[in-house]
Image 1 (cartoon, rainbow, N blue to C red):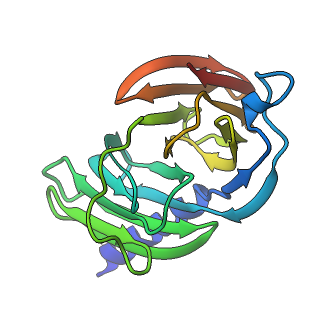
Image 2 (image 1 turned 90 degrees about the vertical axis):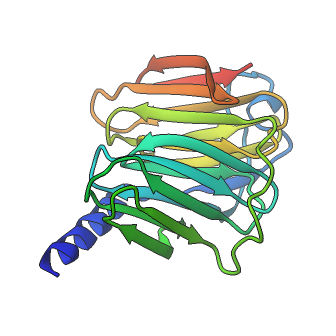
Length: 228
């Protein structure tokens, strides 16, 4: 029991360190609706969206299926990782399966702002966890099309702030990397302007289309990455 309690406390501490304060924004135009198409738009704030976190024993490999009522995404990663659906259609569900035959801890959480809504954990080899919003979803939605993802993979555990946008939507984020942003029905071009708040921070990010990396960029302390 002591080991399980220690694991739970470790996951809770890591969740606190990875806290994402994410705000979806509506606007006259996102980053590409301004006079300078490389600069983020000025948008008004609306209530925060849900965040999904994969925590536990660092380095544990996993496969995840994230779905809302409209689209779904399947991807692989390693613990820890935070996941946010931009412009999501409630409810939300995430199914995560360990890809290792070990007793490593895998904890998944659904968070609104910094409020924990659901949590599930497993130490089983190849164990599976499920978290979902109140009411859940009836089934896994069709695969996202287009499937555009922005993966901020560095600095390791670095504190980040910035904007993730398409032509009409701006998503304000404060997070610890690695962080995966899943765009639901993006309007045309997408971009992210990410700033590392750590001393001498260096941001590393990819944009993926249908699972393939189409743009890679690095720089700091502020990085702009966009597609196409």
